Length: 334
Length: 290
Image 1 (cartoon, each protein chain N blue to C red):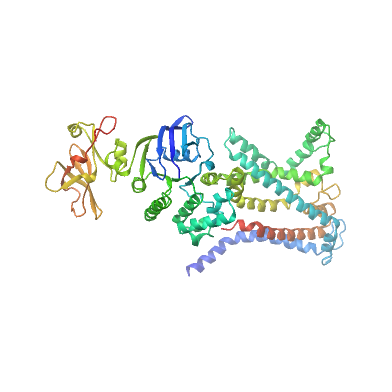
Image 2 (cartoon, rainbow over the protein chains, first blue to last red):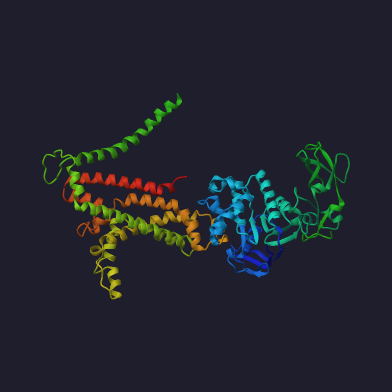
């Protein structure tokens, strides 16, 4: 297992800078998730680490050794691609064995390692099938199998679950988490899905327009977002942002309050408004309330709350959970 | 009820095409079979009597037959080898981004649009001519004896001429196939430690297996009946050195005016082409499945 360090790394495509002077330290055995909206540079960053793109300037260290100029195969990393990138004409066995074959390992070792990987990933019954005969989840496992047989110093995942349906995604997410515990491997995982990021990560790196917005554990990001962007990106449903007089009262340009930190009442409270939409999920009810002077505010209420479009509601923010931001969108105090 | 009605309508709608095909194919084939069993010589009209399989015996025991058969196979194999190997090479080169890509691609494809008679004459007179040809001049520059291509290596010369015309076809199909190769597969192979040669062997070639099979099948069909190039360059000579089956049938029919044995030759050629087709389908057809 290796640590990976990025020092002042930049990447431009034809004059357009997509990653600008980025510093990042990833510790051994850590599962780090790069998360951000599409086009934020998270996939590019992963490809820079993998060696599939060349770094424009800066340094990449793997276990303290300079790997900036190393070809991909020499970095000792494995990557799982969004499209799985399985070799369609090879059986599952040959797909998993391919990196070992390329490394010139002997037949016995290859056989043993492929069987071992198949056992870990529950693929024993599919070894002689072709990728096209497998379901999405099985293909995903083959791609992971191909990654683990090399015994890489770190795993790279490029949105590996985005082609799976919702139920399978939850399953595979747990499998990847289990694999991480089992192998104790350094993993870098790219996703645009903040729920995947929150559930999997030891640490999350939130990227926006080629810059690191904030690095921290999932709960740190949730509790103390450093910027407006992180505050809006982490947490579901999104945090409510309020500008104007109400914000000035708290000596801030913008204040933010999460839907779960608003208490909802049908009788009394701080802000009065009309329900524009009530989403009854059973366990919770999400109400969207139109508050005069503040705009639309989302709040989470108990599942039993029986309100409809047009009803009047009162919302009261939990002052201790209020986030304050200055003009540049940076968090104040906290 | 509806389905039988539809079936009848469908058959009715299909019938013009079917009738046309039958008239187009079955009638000439039947006539060829008929002539092949008769003594039908344009120079000696002797009443076209029925001679049984005599024309076949005559055609199959003609020493020119075996040579033309060998020549046909050699021509097909030679052109296939050059076009498939060259086509892969050119397609790999053209797949890379470069300056002036569009124009280069048009230029590479253009030989396919030159009609065989024209291209063969250009090759014959401008390249392979032992006095005025470019190759003769090149040989002279290096102090070598000029080769009279069409006289000394007629079959090789023909192979080169025909291959030049078919290379764009192979290149075009293989290039299209290359462009559909998933870039992530290549990147995955890179991460897996495959160098460019290993990537070519393990990723690119298997991906090209199907288009290569298509190229081989289609080209074989057309290459079995190469004729124009032979007619305007060597006329099958010297001797029978560059005569293939198509040309042999032509020479029987329109040089010796022996319609009977030419028809027998035509039937033999059809049978041989079918044998070859079955053989080919077995060999490369499994690539076309799934």
